[in-house]
Length: 306
Length: 317
Image (cartoon, rainbow over all chains, first blue to last red; front, top):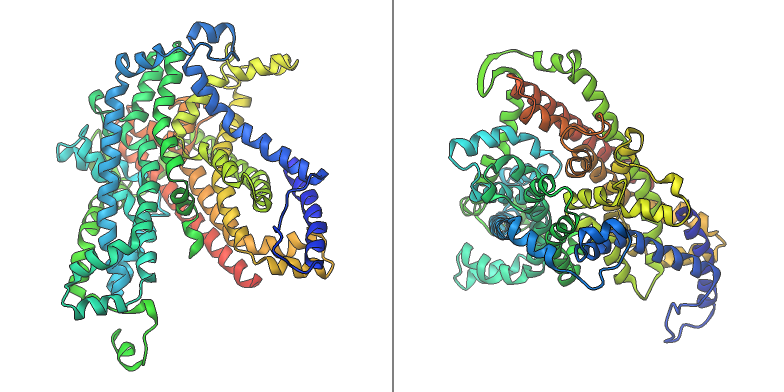
């Protein structure tokens, strides 16, 4: 409700400001100097209010992970003073979060590496060939962006079972590697297409073969796209719950999300440990996000550059 | 054939050149193609075929035509579970769409005007979107816990104690919790995408219109909104796919049974339950039929939305 009202008041506000600005001969003055006005205040309140709604649950998760369960039961809204770290110790060691954590790291890193390498090769070929066969293959890969491929879990289960790869992290890595291909080739091929063909011709004149041209000439030029793809595939693989829930039967091979499910069944009343577990599963993502905001934003808006 | 234009044209268009022979190209594509074929294409086609057979455990029986599909709509519990779960998926879609296109669009257009703190707000709004939906689901289940949950504590604290209730225990409120938590988690995406789209609108158009005396609403209606159609389209398609595939958040909030009393059941949970928890001897046949229907529905409607949007864009520009 407030959302629909606030923009229009803010709009009217900037309206007046813009009018004055265009009326002035444009000097080097800053274009939008923040000025305290009713509309500005309202929009500011809305932005901060929603920031609080957005972030409060996550802050509460971290804060409660530093309190004891007893403390939470008596004061649901207390602060972690002094902070208590025993819940982390318990989650990490007693509840096997160390195993889940390292399994998740291994699976995520290996599968992102796999999908990025094969997608780089394929994307280069899509950008540098022109025949119906390759157009069709590219279309096939792209269709994976829209298809609910997780519904094919039963045959996948039987396939991995026949290969003796149920509960095997490598099985999961291969599956995630394949799942990363549609998005990765989509982003990478559009980058390769922007590179001028003259680069290839120059490299060929210098005697470079196709692979050398790819490796020495193109790869260094698409680094930003590689960063986007790597960061952007990291998130869904790290977070995925569905595939390991079905493909991993052995507790020692659980990744974090499946581990958390088990853990919620076992420690139902131990709130401090539950919050600590949730925080542990979230920390790597927050770190990644703060380090690579740019890549995440460009990955999320990848479809728009088309 | 493809080489002829390149030979006759004096200068090729930059990025349509051919640098790789077919054979070399094939070598480059092969690793991805094998991976895609084995772990995506093959399982997909096989899954579709499973639904046309009768199964005894993991042994495939005779070809039964559409019998598994008939079962879904005529036999209990499926004939009740499917419409129930389907309605919840649709609620998720509309709930998220309304939230994203009011609050999300509002936040994006306010941020667009902002020069300071822009990155900060973007980060705040996007963080929940990156956190695992399973973690988000469990986190909210703890927050909404009837006795010690902080949400009820806040309500009691500000004198609205009578509103405090077992949010996830009551079938009437449970599904709305799922809808709101999902919409809350997803909002970061439209904020960023609409932000990028707003950034792509040349300021001159807006300024020219305002010089011509167009009101703020008129400018939003006739300039901003049409320019946002492609972004709104992307958001709609992805929200639709996401709402139909919803699994971790309902699982964390209501378990695989969609508790309480199926109030938070969705189609993916129903599929999972049928395939892995039902104990029925024809579990594979029935669950594959559910998967196939869901598959066709998701793909068909996404294509439809995309087509309608293309048409709308053509009309607008």
